Amino acid sequence: TLQVGSVSCSCWLSMYRLWCPTLCAISHVMLRVKRLHKELLALQNDPPPGMTLNEKSVQNTITQWIIDMEGASGTIYEGERFQLLFKFSSRYPFDSPQVMFTGENIPIHPHVYSNGHICMSILTEDWSPALSVQSVCLSIISMLSSCKEKRRPPDNSFYVQTCNKNPKKTKWWYHDDTC
Image (cartoon, rainbow, N blue to C red; front, side, top):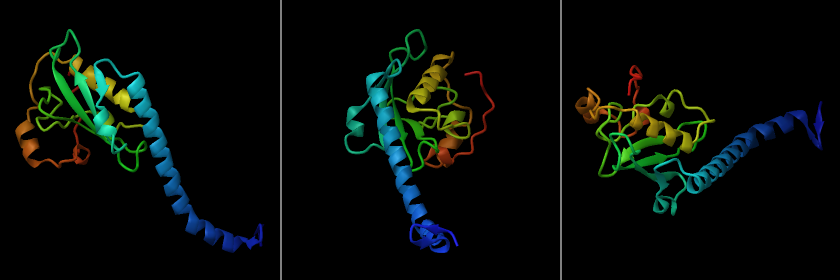
């Protein structure tokens, strides 16, 4: 029998099984909080162009951020102001954040529904823990900046009436890379 300190192998293994889920959960929470703090500082100190963290949004919680965004100059969104809502689950960064436009002005774009949901693969199936809030923001800036015509997705009315409030629960069909 293997001895680990004064505990035999079979007892040590049962103790490991008892403690491991708790230790893993604590470790995962610490990883998420550390990662969110790191990304929050990066966003405050070096935000993507036209993006500003709404400081009030993070005063009470680290798991929900509002980012104020201004349309890039030289684009059809120049001078317009938008807000992005980021919600981070307990599985972040292994699970993508929930990201959507919120507030009074939702951009009119072929991949943005009138309820603020964004059809973008990195927000669901193409998410990687290597991505960050900044990289998501840059992708959204790029998506808006490359658009040549303001229009809603063709299924906007049906989608908005039938969708879940959480855009991550939508099974998106990515078929259009033109916008």
